[in-house]
Every structure is written in C-alpha cells, then in structure tokens.
Image (cartoon, rainbow, N blue to C red; front, side):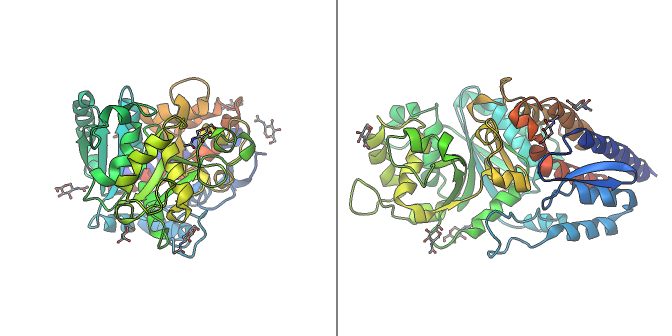
Length: 432
Ligand SMILES: *[C@@H]1O[C@H](CO)[C@@H](O)[C@H](O)[C@H]1NC(C)=O
Ligand SMILES: *[C@@H]1O[C@H](CO)[C@@H](O)[C@H](O)[C@H]1NC(C)=O
Ligand SMILES: *[C@@H]1O[C@H](CO)[C@@H](O)[C@H](O)[C@H]1NC(C)=O
Ligand SMILES: *[C@@H]1O[C@H](CO)[C@@H](O)[C@H](O)[C@H]1NC(C)=O
Ligand SMILES: *[C@@H]1O[C@H](CO)[C@@H](O)[C@H](O)[C@H]1NC(C)=O
Ligand SMILES: *[C@@H]1O[C@H](CO)[C@@H](O)[C@H](O)[C@H]1NC(C)=O
C-alpha cells in the first residue's frame, strides 16, 4: 500500500516535470516530442537520456522486473576499449554498483583554501548523491577549515556516509620553496601538482577544482582510466572548443598542449604511471621524473605563466603529448561553452556530465543557469526526495534563465542529471 502511494506520488511529480519540459523550447536542437499517456513530452533524441524511456515505462512499471528490463534496455555496451571516446560507458546498473563495494575505492582529490569550503562540500555532495562508491576523498585544506569539513561530512545520513571514507591533509610543499608555491596563481592551487608525490599509496585519482558539480556518477569518470593506452597517464579536456575565442593560442607566452591547451579543472591521473615516467622537457636533454620537473619548470616560466598550475601542466604535456588522454568537453563544461552560443558538441549530443563553474559563476548573477544548479544542490537536504526536493525546483529555476545563452541550453544541464535522479529515487523507493 505504502509503495503504491509512493509510486502514485512519483507519477504526479513526473507529470509536472513533463509539463515543464513541454514549456521549455520544443524547437531546440536535438529535441523530439513523444506523447506519454496523454502528456506531451519532450526529450533529447540522443543516447541515454532516459527521461523518455522512463516516461514510456513509468505508467506500466509495477516492480523490479520492469525496472530490470528498463535498465538492460537502456544499457548499450559496457565501455569496452573499442567504443569511441565521445561515447561514455552507460551508468552501471545497481547490481554492478553493488559489486564495486568489494573493490578498490575510487579516489577523488580536491584542494580547498580561503572561502572555498562550502563550494567544496557542495561538489562532494553532488558526488555522493549520484555515486554508489566505495570512494575515498582526499581533501587538502588550510588548518582552520579542517574541523568544518569533518563536522559536515560526518553529519551526512548513513545512506551516503557509508559510501566514502575521507582524509583531510594540511597544505604542504616539498623543500624550501613553500612560500613561492603558495603564491602561484590562486592560494593553494599548486598543491595539486604534488599529489603524485604526497599520495604515495594511491594508484589513481580524479582531481577536481572546488567549483565543480557532478551531473553523472563518479563511476563514469573513473571508467575512463581503463581507456588509457600504454603511454597515457593523465586525462583532461581541451581548454577551448573554438580557437577564435580561446586563450592559449592568442595570449600564452609559454608552450601549451595541442591547439587550444588543456583545462586542468577535471583531471584523471594514474599516479603510479606518473611516478614512474620520465618526462621530456626543454631544460635538459634527459627525461625527468615528475618530482624533479616541477621546480625547474616553475623557475623557468614563472614570469610568463598566467593560470599557475594549469600552465605548468600545459607545458609538461606540450613536450609529452603521448602521455595525455583528452576527453571531450562535456566532462568539463564551462561558461565558455555556452556564453557566446553553444560550442561543445559532445554536450549537444549527450548532455553535460561534469559542470565547471569557473570564474565564480556559481556565486554571482552573471550566469543564472550555472548558479541555479549550484544552489539547488547546495540547498538540497540529503535525506529528502531527489525529484520533488531537487529536480523539480531546479527545473523551475532553470526555466527562468532562458534570457541568457547558457540558459537557452539548460536542457543539456539536466539531460543526464534528471534521469539519474529519477532513477535513484525509484531505487530508494523500492529498497525502502
Ligand atoms: C526557441 O528556439 C527557436 C529556434 O531555436 C528560437 O528562435 C526561439 O527564440 C526559442 N524560444 C525561446 C523561448 O527560447
Ligand atoms: C572505510 O574504511 C573502513 C576501515 O578501513 C573500511 O572498513 C570501509 O570499508 C571503508 N569504506 C569505504 C566506503 O571505503
Ligand atoms: C616569456 O615571454 C617572453 C615574451 O613573450 C619571451 O620572449 C620569452 O622567451 C618567454 N620565456 C620563456 C622561458 O619562454
Ligand atoms: C595505473 O597504471 C598502472 C601501471 O601501468 C596499472 O597497473 C594500474 O592498473 C593503472 N590503474 C588504473 C586504475 O587503471
Ligand atoms: C596513446 O595515445 C596517444 C594519443 O592518441 C598517442 O600519441 C600515443 O602514441 C599512444 N600510445 C601508444 C602506445 O599507442
Ligand atoms: C517557463 O518559462 C516560460 C517562458 O519563459 C514561461 O512562460 C512558463 O510559465 C515557465 N513555466 C514554469 C513552470 O515556470
């Protein structure tokens, strides 16, 4: 009986979401219209945007059998090495996620200083909301922030708290150049360069900036590690899709990767390989280990670099391009991808996977679509319903941002996030 009432409630919520979709721009690119039980329903035509599939199955769903059936139907391949890089592995179904529990955890690292604590916790919240784990968080932070991080992370409901362990580290640099490193770019940003040296026992990790929100489970980003070929040891996305408005090719006074450089805000690293590799460089004719490379590089280029650690990463991979796996822009979707019009093809096809609110757009009114997602996740109480407390209010807010270029493509922001939340809420309802 209770289950029946919940299913009914979800149906009603879903009907409202459908209506909202109809109000959003039906004529926009890649959108098709399906009619569901008398409700017009707009859905992106590409891949695993399963709102449509869920919608069509929603009314007839009775229990686990139908759900299983839907998941298999939605699955596709399982990320075999032969799949093209723009096609991510489908979200693992719950049995697979449960199986991960006995495995090595996925490691996530972040460096938080100054006023970035709330932003960092919101990023971690987006991770635990969507991911099954197990996960290990490595938080590097100034001493005065440590207790705040512990208090908040330990207060999360056990449903979420049981998925991860965390370690909080002080900011530290090797040798006598502490102050110099600390002042490079933003406070503490250069800390991340030393992760391979500081986290000796960790094989691989995903490093993210604090101004990041996951709109797909961490599992999906983690799966990219297994796509590395024999020489690749790190992965990042291009800094820009459009060379005419890109930064590095127009302004950089140092070498950078590829045609527009890479953005280091979302970076997968196989630390084992980074520690073992010898990197070619323009200082000596022999390869240098990661730990030997950083300081000489910094001294050579410190007067010419603008974006700190990211510039050093670009210089390193300029000389060692075979070591970098480049993933598409929807793994690191920034305002640059929509403020002058939508230019991230991967996002147009498959929606945004990871949102990067750089230059403070999560906190000011310039890009209301970015801010709407940030605020929705920040304010969502973890124990509450993912659809009625998170997705629905978010859709309403996003609908009010269509006067901006990024707001016009806000369906890309929820293309993955929406179905994932609906799916998770259904699992929760069935378990509980
Ligand atoms: C809907 O999309 C069309 C074509 O893409 C555009 O001309 C129109 O202004 C859009 N309407 C709204 C409300 O965004
Ligand atoms: C956290 O650490 C404990 C103790 O080492 C371990 O038993 C548990 O499985 C870990 N949990 C996760 C989610 O990694
Ligand atoms: C730094 O920039 C100046 C001016 O563009 C250039 O002449 C110089 O070679 C650059 N230094 C290095 C180490 O590349
Ligand atoms: C990282 O590279 C090492 C050495 O090649 C390999 O043994 C390990 O499996 C890799 N880790 C992942 C997560 O792929
Ligand atoms: C791995 O891929 C990179 C980028 O495509 C390439 O430069 C490199 O040669 C490849 N390495 C091997 C061993 O195939
Ligand atoms: C969505 O936006 C459109 C146009 O801006 C507006 O007419 C409509 O009432 C909005 N719907 C909701 C539910 O906010």
